[in-house]
Image (cartoon, rainbow, N blue to C red; front, side):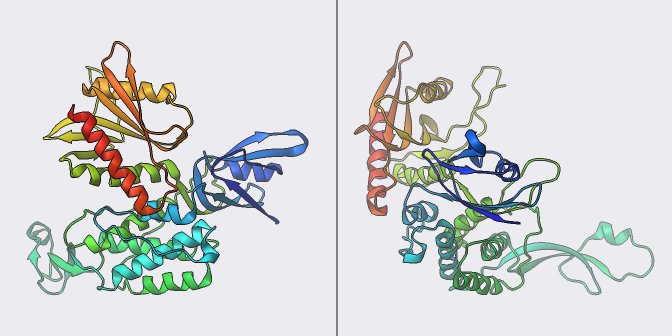
Length: 401
């Protein structure tokens, strides 16, 4: 079967191609992957839908579509958003010229370099509680299980703490290294480096197909793993290409949902900048309720607290603010958040804007002000972080009045 090579930008008018029914079915097999609009003569307009990456899709009749979704940001700028950590704010090395326009090779190379940097100090070990039957006593006897045995006293039912590399941090890192090494479009040298790093994680059990990503908690002991784990989780999240239907089409690849990437960066960078003002940011809290009966939930991107009391709310929008006034539905959303949280002010943060400077919008008869801000993600990393610091100062000053 032939393979259709299709390249589409993340945003914009898209591209017009003649597609077979099988190819259309392949593109529609993953919800929200692209936008499709029929045209005359068997042609279709294929437009981006805020996702970037590389994915290989197979239609019901066996035809294959290799879809490359290009980001609107330069790859080096996107890598900074992906790798940013306020606790370890190192900047990724410049991407190679051959990878400057290709996201997947650059992400795979960044993962390899980050993992190598992490493992230079050795593989992290931790304690894990193990229950098993042994021909000798180790740790503590599981008395209830042992008393239920009939006959010979061996083996002994025991429970003990094992000091092992098979912990959540290493399982996440190993899963990402193995996944990146087999993705389409990864250069051979990078693939080899990824496999070599995976071999260093001896004694770590790989994730089984369909097994969820383990949870890990940042601690003093695993601080050096932080950047690699955050990047590994993004790679593993990008593996979730979920087709529809009872018999899923065969798919593989790597995808990033850019609004999630932007929201995560705003959460980390703005939270770190606001901490200097003694403001704590809480992301995606699920306990908020819109109505008095507590039946309607809402989950803001960021709620700002000072001395344990909410003082403002922030919502990140991965879109271009092209006019002085935000879209009405964005204002409605912040109005609802501020009303339910009993706050006089909320903030919208856009990925870019045509208008200069923040704009205030006082909601009539509500006493609530919504301020629209913008961050230019195309700035160099240092300049972008400086802009975030200025944004934090404005938010802190606005909520101090």
